[in-house]
Every structure is written in C-alpha cells, then in structure tokens.
Image 1 (cartoon, rainbow, N blue to C red):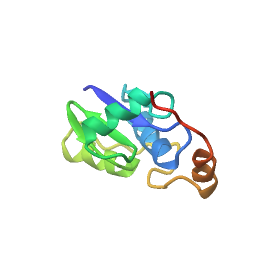
Image 2 (image 1 turned 120 degrees about the vertical axis):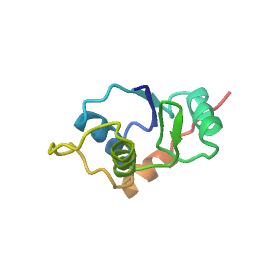
Image 3 (image 1 turned 90 degrees about the vertical axis):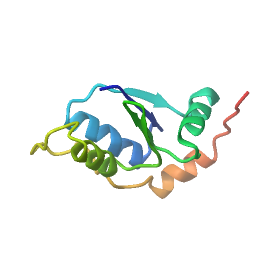
Amino acid sequence: MKIRAYLKPHCGWSRGVRAIMHKYSLAYEDINILTTGANYEEMVHKSGQPLSPCVEIDGVMLADVSGEEVENYLLANDLVKPNDALAEEATNVGCADGENAKMATKTIRFF
C-alpha cells in the first residue's frame, strides 16, 4: 500500500493521522506542507481544496481528514485489520488555539 500524507508538523489533526499510521505499523510518506510551497500546492492540486490533513492511499485522496476518518477508511476497505492497540495521540482533535495563532504569525512565501 502506498500512502502519502500531507501534514503540518504540530497540528492536532496531523498528529492524529500519524498516530493511526503508527497504530497499524503502516509505512507512509510524511509530506510537510509548511516547508515549501510546492508541497502545499501539490496537496491543493491533488485534493481540490486547501485544508489539511490530506491522505492519499493507493491513489485515493482523503481530503481534510482526521486520524479517525483515515482509520475508518482503512478498516472499511479491508486495508488493515482491527487491533486493540491504542493510538499514541487523540485521533479526532484539531489544532489548539495556540497552535493556530502561532502558525498565523509565520510568513510563508510561495515562489
């Protein structure tokens, strides 16, 4: 299975997606959408919208999803088997107000 996850470094939603990947020991490409404009633009182009996280699993784009939604997709499509492991982080929690405020003060230039 090929998984590409378009994530922010410190967002609650992104941490939830990473927690699901670890819970099921899934190999995935963690693409930081804040490091370069190209990563963000690729996510927007592929998903058709600007919100993250977005997770592409074998060519299927799950746009603006939580870790819980990613887990539900994986289970519903028999891509993983249910297990009793606990996720390392909450899987359905957004960014804290402080995280959003901190990201809003950073200038991101896309050239």
